[in-house]
Amino acid sequence: EAQKRLAKSGRKMQRLGSNLMMSLSAPLAGLGVAAVKAAGDFEAMSNGLTAIMGDAEAAGKELELLKEAAKNPGLGFQQAVKGSVRLQSVGISAEAARENMLAMGNAIALVGGGAAELDRATLAMQQIGAKGKISAEEINQLNEVIPQIRSVMNDTFGTSDGKELEKMGVDANAFILQITKGLEKLPKAQGGIKNAIENTGIAMQSFLANLGTEINEAFNLQENIDAFSNKLTALSER
Image 1 (cartoon, rainbow, N blue to C red):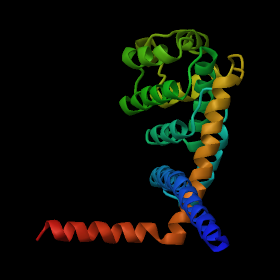
Image 2: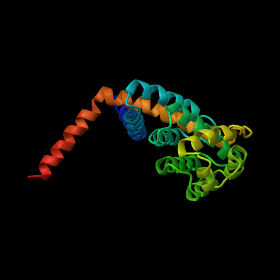
Image 3: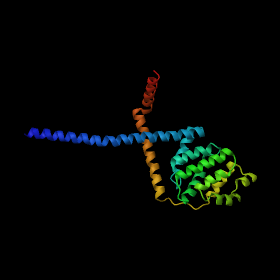
Image 4: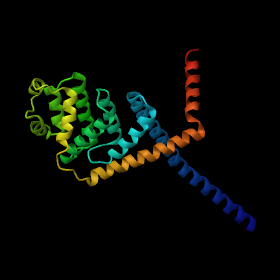
């Protein structure tokens, strides 16, 4: 009888252990997938900066500076990296691009905006740089996310009319650099709950990216995935 009870207890403990492993396995697998994806996203951002800067070491340093800058109100890490690439692609230095985004992010945060609005603002700035002039279309795009832009333009240049700026000899890059200084004169936005949430997201993304990199190195995921992809391609071509 005692042996039966022990056997029964053993089976219960075994079932309990199996159930516990199953309940833990799914979340851990999900965490692993999220970590590997975050690592891939981080690698893509790093590659984008390296491509535009032409130096992996300089790009790595700039990525860390952008991560720190993204903690300020109105910015987001991915949006800051994308914005840096956009602005550098039209001849703005990495440092000037970062300063521009900090100034625009602050202006955006003052009116309740955030990372999504910064993304639209850097796109408008890139278009100004690519066109080589300040057109009404881009001014309107900026005004949608930075309502203070016309006032800042008037204070900085004495006009908010793109044609007048062209007559004054203000080219696209000079506009970007000078409007940065104008925006920097605005009051400083307070962080608040929205910024705290965005910063928590940045910290979580960084943690997952580091974990994903370790998982990739431990299990050689990239090589295995590439090999699997090549096998699928070979099978499809038969």
